Image 1 (tube, rainbow, N blue to C red):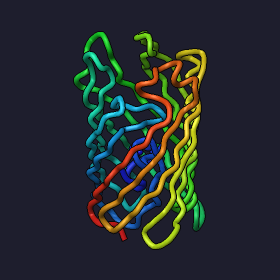
Image 2 (spheres, rainbow, N blue to C red):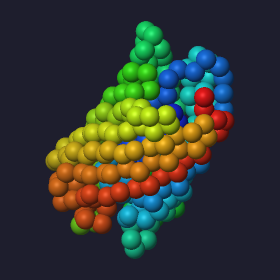
Image 3 (spheres, rainbow, N blue to C red):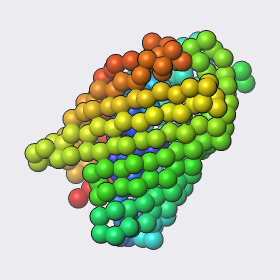
Length: 249
């Protein structure tokens, strides 16, 4: 669901590739409706740009119960095909968080990725089940499994199969509202392409009660470039501004 750290665990984030998306929130103490609006210069998800290096606008709205249940939706503009195809990504997600001791929390999340305006010849929809374990709001490890991941290679070929994604993301305060954030992951596409690739990110963020700014550097292994082309992979920077509601404390 990652866009603020608190809003999207998938997915989760939905990895810092969509601006701090992957770290799950701590378990809340009361029912709440939360969300955010964001704008980014490049929507990078798991090391691959979903906009071909262009800007994107994003939004999230979700309900969190006092018992840890979570239900929500997230959306972003995309450009998955420079010729024609999906220009919008919508994620519906549901899950539950548990406190594990005083400092740890666990979460299980189901996510459906929908691309409503893709074409019959280029379908991108898929599903994921994500399990994560977090230490406060500092460090989060997650495992995402998909039974039907669909990808198009740089040659235009579509394959569908099972996929696993391993993510480790974290953030650390530096001074006042300034903190460093980063992550690393591996996308196992053995069933789809017979291979996989690693990716990582590192950035600085400035967070106030409602607004957060992040400047991040994103990269992926050469194998990602072999699969998806240089237009969407390789070294890249992204500046993201996020407005959250209600304000965080």
